[in-house]
Length: 492
Image 1 (cartoon, rainbow, N blue to C red):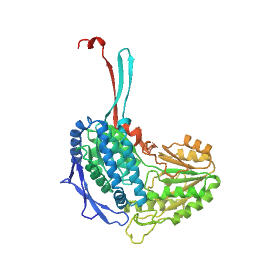
Image 2: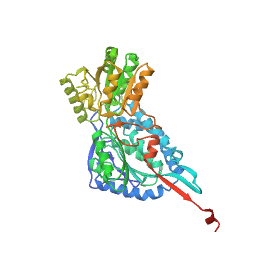
Image 3: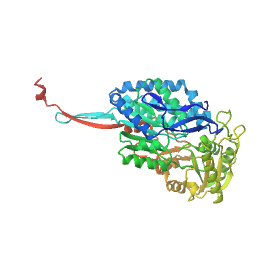
């Protein structure tokens, strides 16, 4: 993309450039080179988009669900037709490898596919003769105008956690993507535009804190979907709730994996390495803490260290590269500062990714895979989301101790166990306090027909993204109780 490319807002079916907006430079994290500029919209643009959505909603809510999903079918085909272009766009502005970007886009398409089933999924139910001559029906109706505030690490997938369901259920949605990665969202909006979806049903407002705060406070926006850090998620949840909105906020994580002595160490280390270092550790389901139990410590430690040392770091476009850069210079500095802090507090850097350089990408934001052993389970590193390719290793003597250690943490996004024991696996999945559980898996990512769960400080709200939870979130129930006395009908 040429440096002069401008990322604009998509409001009321038109591409718009706010007259008073500032502009932010968007860079390729592998090279630090400029790939475009994005408009930083003031609150007035949010109000403009909301008014357009209000006008569109009156007709859209009356459009039959079977007609609404025809636009989603068209959108799904456009995503397939432009799959490789979208994947390369994700790599360009987000830094992940092409394989990772393709996986992201595929997961997004799966959500569109599930949302195409909304005519069946949003059906209500009824009961005839709840009393003599009286019938009762529950129907689902759209919430109204909704909004999604999405993060940088999955610029294609996470907007597609929300927008297809909201649209299919009869709502109008405003998406505010991360200002760090707005190009992918612009391309998605261009594809939606090609479906000829009515103006105002889907809109994109770019910006930073001012635009986000305007969304949280606008009286006509009825529901908010958010993914980001727990601190911001808590703010979004509390602010939106104070303004009478329903809210779903996916927060941060510090995902633990437990390795038992009976696990296949070669497979386990490979899977955990992909989880910890894939996407440069910048995903909410990345493994952050590994807890070895009993005799698993030495064989697993040797295997994971060798894997980390051999992992190829570089531009996500290059063949053979297994890990790309982190998103920004600030992120790189913050991650390296945490490694230094942990080392100063007694952790041993078995593999140290600081100072990683990549030929031809000398200005890129690269941090190599890092493994820190003997991390204090009660220390700051074990409890803080680093959001980078840093794996903290701890050791306990029993499964009981491992479960107790996991449950003592403030997060509850994902926890995984590697074992050959069905009994241990059953106990783990029953007792561990986390919303997504993996058994011999390093990334327990739910399919689109299941909710993307999360407990404790990893989620604020009641209904999660994806699947049936999405239908519940984007519809409101109405119960109708009817009586039609027979004598009234005799008059006609």
